[in-house]
Image (cartoon, rainbow, N blue to C red; front, side, top):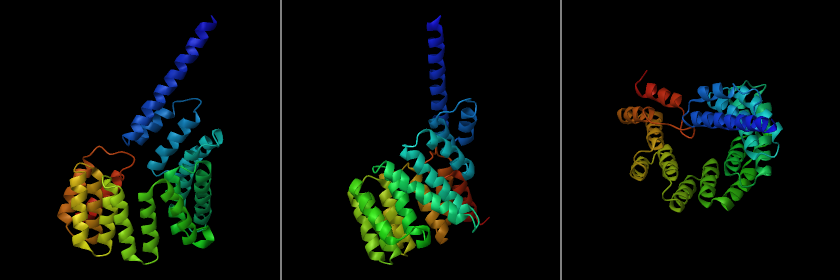
Length: 282
């Protein structure tokens, strides 16, 4: 009879794996609530289950619940850089959305977990990028600082030279070295000529600084490079809405975006819907 119990145990493991894979697929299709519902059926969630639940809650804007389940995942696997990184992100959102008395606490926790994620895995590029952003934006009393950001930018460049130029561009912008920032963005684009995100970075930056013809040329290049990429439509539309120009074109691009199959890496539909209302004068 022992083989029967072993078979049942193996079937249970396979069932759990299949359930997680279905939940992950729902997450990738941005159906976060359905992913959560499927995972909540598990009596004994694994660290991976908690990690996916945390990502679902994060995408739904429920940042406290996200930190709660990420903490469970990290407690089960304390060497996991990804869990530490997502904890940093979730605490960062809590800082951004909370009042003045609790925001510093959550911001400090975000920094601590970003630093821990990088300490656990120095090749975690996304964690390095978020730590750089924290140091760049946070005031000194919360552990931020341009010198710290510059040190992380050098580490980023060791792993990804184009991303390193992008980080240096952000530093130059903060220091009001606007031409230098644009040059660094062009270097990043030249190093990764087939990455549409690099072209969009430059297009947005040029638009922000009133260099509209150059920005439009960069957006046109992005559309030629990736004519069916929703990111191109969203970023161009957002620039138009923010600058209150080409609003008819912005509405067209946002409608295209909302009809697309989006992923968690794309801007949420809610952001596009908000921009569409602004473009329509609602």
